[in-house]
Image (cartoon, rainbow, N blue to C red; front, side, top):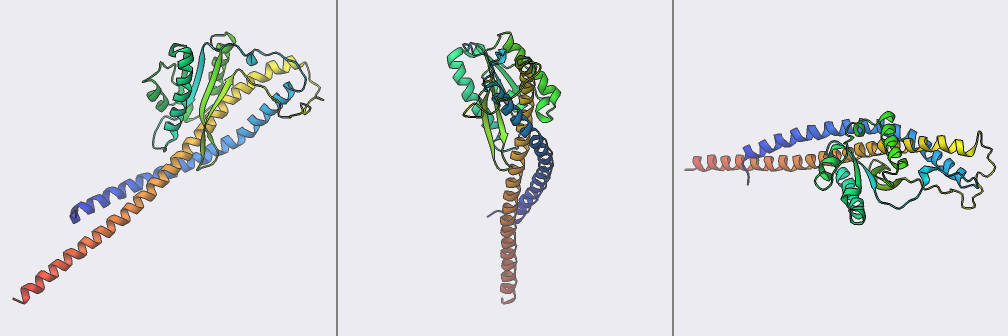
Length: 287
């Protein structure tokens, strides 16, 4: 059994850790509330915009857009979104695992030299750089997502696609469902797959479009794509803070349990020491 001095030292160490995890949980919870507000305000708009666009284009209006062009896949861009820091449970590892699966599949078909990887977050960059050549690391836009930065990334990807320097853009990120549940997502960003939400294809057939369907789509599609990048950054940011909140809560709970065990062990040790001393005293007086 460890000495009382050793147990007391461990108690002090656990108490210090407990203070740190409790503080980190409070900070993560505060950031999560802000991120929740941002993503909850943005997601309905993003989804409704996508629904309107899909239904409009599938209601009988024939409009050809370069962003919907399907062509043989020779070069692929993959945007992987995670975080710059750790202590958030399996948040980063889950994203990296999914990204590895996607990248390995394309690497087998096309070769690594035909993959353009855009890491958003230091942890993704550190992990994938060991196996792939990466492009610019977008560390800054992961911590504090801003529409301006998201728009710049979307514009860059759209330009490469229009110039046919890439034939496909894939997204790997984490979707925030609740504080306890985050889901790793893999979606195609380009080309756009426009499908009707109405199975009968009659949902928006009575729309009158001005100045013209072609003009509307020309203006609307780039806005939709820019908004998509911004939305997934907000989504991932909320997921990160949720994962860190849960991880720090679990660490705090574990520290409390360990503290109780150590206090019990310390009290038992003190009791045994006092009992031993009493027995020595009693034994000495009887001689």
